[in-house]
Amino acid sequence: MSFLSFLFGEQENAPPPDPYWQRDSSLKFYRLLGLRPGRPPKLKGAGGVFAVFHRGVKPGWVYVGATRDLGAAVERLQDHPEVSEMEARGGLYITWAFIKDDKRDGVVAYLREQLKPEIVDPEMDREMGCNPDKAKPIPVQRPW
Image 1: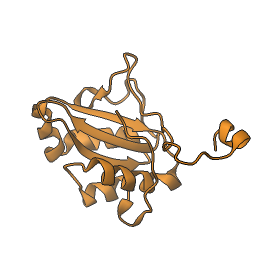
Image 2: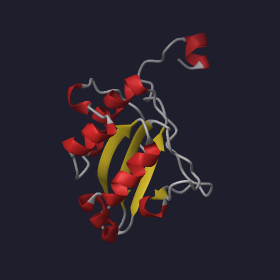
Image 3: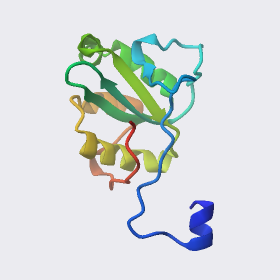
Image 4: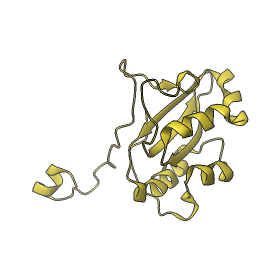
């Protein structure tokens, strides 16, 4: 609940909350293949929801997931053959939001419904501790 919601109550037809999708200091999304363990941004041990997309002639969403360790998730995504081959489509980019563990699956369910990512990999979901299939979607603002 935000401070304004506390003071004035929830507004009808209010936009979904902004989970603060992360960008670099130039306000650009991070290149997925440019992120390295131990270098900023330090993601090891931080949990949240992430979204990967490619740019190019026909930009598109690649994968949306959640994890307890964003650093390990980045490494897994970089090594995933189906994900990394999409680098040729104009570069792979990633953003993430630090979302509480009990809300992550619902946020992923909502974002997958809205963004329609090209890759849905149940095995990778399980590895990362993500299980959005039976979660009630939780609306949030999309990463832009």
